[in-house]
Structures are given as structure tokens and as C-alpha cells.
Image (cartoon, rainbow, N blue to C red; front, top):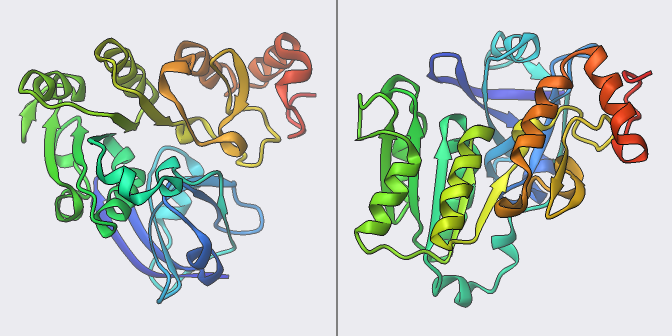
Length: 292
């Protein structure tokens, strides 16, 4: 069992939990994820790691209530425990494998949308701990849904907050802030964008036009987290990949976002899963038992 030692509500229906998971905390790196279950019959829920404390043996997760599984998670309190807390899974951020001195020469931009601020934070924090200052754009629909602003401000080189409705910070989408920064003379060697699929799609369309290499995290399309169910099947630069085992980070300019978002919707129904299996044949990666 994995005890919850801290719980807080960051915004409406968005929760942060620190969980005792010593083995995960010792080995996890920015960009990786865990799979949690509330009980033996509970849904397997993949969540990108928001933070970790190796000394205390804790891992921080952030989640938004979007279904029955996350609603059950939200009902847990400090002192309660998860039945399963498996990880670390997925590949770490590419940044952690780069030479530190080379990284210090790069101009890095992070773009976080909504709950995407949670997986962006550990990467920016890791860079900060290694003496590298990155620019960060954090966007949300409204001020009331903005999360981790103070935490991000403490580790970012420059933090730019934007809200779709203009209720706080800059007004408009994150893409407008990217345009504004470039127009002001900012130059970037790489962009890391994490958030809703539609946000990442339009960030990539813009950064491709601006000539900025871009990495995206496809955690939002993961379901099973082990490569068995086929939900996170995506085409990247013409090749079939699976977000949970090959990622979750990929070359954003090579991701077929339209295909991925279409699959996201179709996969939700039994009829849709059967159709995808028929269309994709051996590349479907079935094995979850749901596709017949």
C-alpha cells in the first residue's frame, strides 16, 4: 500500500498528492509517469510525475477529475493509501541525457497548458538545479484554473502566464505569447510543449513555421500504460509508436495529431475499438481483451 502524506486542491477538481513510494522516488526522472489504482478493482490511471523527493521517498502527482477513476482518487485523503503505485514508466525527458554544458548554451522554452503544468514543472526544476534557466509559458482557460504558478516562478528563468479569457496575466492562447516573445527578439533552440492535444497541435504548427524544434508529451492519450491496449497508438514521422512505451515524449513536428485525436474519440466505445482493430490489423497492439 502507498500512503498519501499530503493532499491539496490546486484548483476546482484539480488535486495534488504526495505519496510514499520509496522505490519509485529513488529511480524516477523528469518526463516519466506512474500507474495508480485505488483498490484491487480500480481503474489503472497513468499520471505523469510532477515532483519527487528521494530523501523522503515521496512522489508528487497532480490529476484532474474527468471520470469515475479520478473521482475515486479525489475522495482519498491524507492517511489513506493507493493499492498500486507502479513506476517509473516511460522514457525520461531527452534533456536529462544531454551534456549539461551543452544545455547551458541552449535557449529553451516550455509551454504548459492546463494540467500540463504538472509534468512541465519537474523538467524546469531539474534544469534549474543544474544551473540552466528556461523560459516558461503557463496557460489556462481562466485564472481559477491556473496551477503551480509560485512553484514554477521559483525555478523558471522567465515565467509568462496567460489566460484564454484575459482574467489574469497575458490575454489569449499560449501561441499568441510565443509569437509575442519571438517578435520581441527572443530566440529558442528547442520548445517543450505539454498540455491538451489540441494545444500541442497548434503550438507545433506555429513552432514549425518559426523553425523551432519541438518536443511534446502524449501522456493525455494513454489508457493502459503498458502498450497492451492500443489506445495511445500514434504515427510519428510515418512510423507507428505507442506513447506509453516509446514515449511519452516525441518530435512534435512529426506527430499526426489529427489521427491521434480521432483515435482518442473512437477508442471510447466498444464499437470504435473494434473498428480500429479492423483498420489497423497487426499494428493495433491489441491485448487488453476489450477488442474481441
